[in-house]
Amino acid sequence: MTNKGTWDIIHSKYIASAVRPQQYPHPELTEVAFIGRSNVGKSSLINSLCRRNGLARVSSTPGKTQTINFYDLEAKRTFEDNSVERQEFYLVDLPGYGFARTGKANRDQWSGFIAKYLSGSDNLAMVCQLIDIRHKPLESDMECYHWLKSCGLMVQIILTKSDKLSKNAAMSQKALFRRELGLSDDQIMVYSSANHTMRGELIERIMGAVNNYI
Image (cartoon, helix red, strand yellow):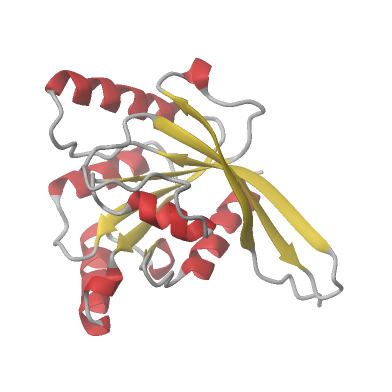
């Protein structure tokens, strides 16, 4: 049996920012969206995943991402017989929920276009929901997860900033979130953007979702 090899992200570039469907990029591609509370480390994780510092802007100000940002990613894997498979898809960076220092009107506007994208996209293969591993499950995280599932979306929970905890503490937090959200082990993972921990595994899970969706 031919070894399928492992996927890697070999190219990434910013494509477009949008707040309404007419601004979404063309041509249409399969999409994987990233969402999480403000300051969860989403931009750092995207940069780690793509091995490209500065692709997504990292800010110390929570709620900096205020538009839906599309990035064109190309993944590649090499088979045992040296043949190569390539796959192109969009990584979609969504504004954080639990916005800090913004008015209610802005929050309502943002939540409106985010909900419209998530519930209306015909190309969305998976949503990666990022949660800070250092905290207990927050109501906003729980609400977001259950809302995503109610839309029929495939959700991958990613516990960020795992380098801030000991290995035992990180595993305890992972077990806590598994219980609280009723997850199987393949629906949740820990990640450190500083150390790129679990980068390869996350890419494999993303590509599995992308290829199953096509």
